[in-house]
Length: 225
Image 1 (tube, rainbow, N blue to C red):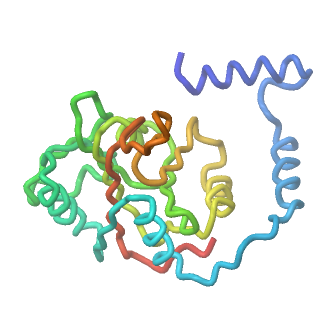
Image 2: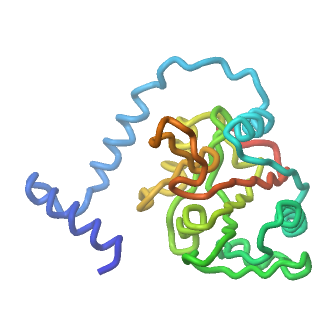
């Protein structure tokens, strides 16, 4: 049984106990959309900053590093430069959407697949990014496995400027409007993994990557959301 069918089976049993049809009707979905639309957002701090600049500032505050390129084609050279400068492995795994970039031309060996225990560098895109907090947002899927941002010691994220939104509210709004059906998992990545569970001392890499490097592609004006 796949993850999707397992989830649908569980939700179907819940709906059966509630006396409802196995799947949500069009009327029910419209009622939810109307409920969300009828409830305006709560008051929020002023956002008198540029979204791209704010995102980069906040990401650096969270101990991520940031590099800038003008096009997607320039990403491999930027990633190679970062890995060589840090003395990191020049082999990596990546999402399918990045597989066709000229990695070998930059001296890198990159394969598109899920990450495994021995993989030290994972390269992903991002569904969107949140300017207010410097957070990356990824959604799970067959072509966007979450393991690439969780297992390797180094996570390199390719972020398009056009996908940077103001805050968490806009990120959820974007997902509702574009994806329709919620993904199995949504991950919010705010810098390297860290924990202060032991003697209140902050330790990086406690539950995930030691380092997060963001390659920002200045492709378009940031999203209006």
